[in-house]
Image (cartoon, rainbow, N blue to C red):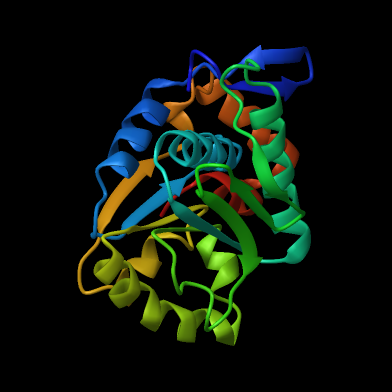
Amino acid sequence: IEKYIKLHTPVGITPFALYPYQKKYLHAVHNADNTPLLGAFGRQMGMTSMMCAYSLWKAIFREQTKTLIIGFSQVHTQSVMSLFYSMHDLLPKWLQSEMIQRTKFVCTLENRSSVQVQTASLNSVRGMTNVWIDEPAQVFKSKEAHGMLASIVPCLSAAGGSLILAGSGPDVLPLAKHFSYCNIFRAGWRAVPGRGEAWAEHQIAVLGKERFRKEYELD
């Protein structure tokens, strides 16, 4: 990921240089197996970029991998797919994989791996080997999401797949109650290099204490 994935940033196209907490998180994702992994982060900590980068790596190097990314709205899911395509298109030509399907919601590679994005649906996990739920606190505000969750774990268990939930703010950790057992990964705003007390004081002055808590704190 660090060697070949690139991102569009305000200063131009730059390599995806992972922070230590991002490396630890992706290691946890890679070893999640059949145990759900709940990731809780502060706002603007690169969750979606990590999700897209790992999904792209897995689609290219693991044949017939079927990844589903669930978001809280169609606008959200389309922005995720746009980021996924951007990462792919910025790869060296020799590393890019031929796409036999490229739409706003589904990408299928020549090795039969696919990445699909959509909002919550009762039938959304069938046939999938990996499921990501991006900003789950927002996703589970819909009735369909609760019905979907009941079918995710057994479907993925049968397929040997993994369930990854990653979100920001204090509403993420309480979602652990939906599982009899899950692994939890925490990374607060202090994990980002350069975010110290002076940074927090400035954000609180701009946002207010309550808004800062909702955006960046985990508890």
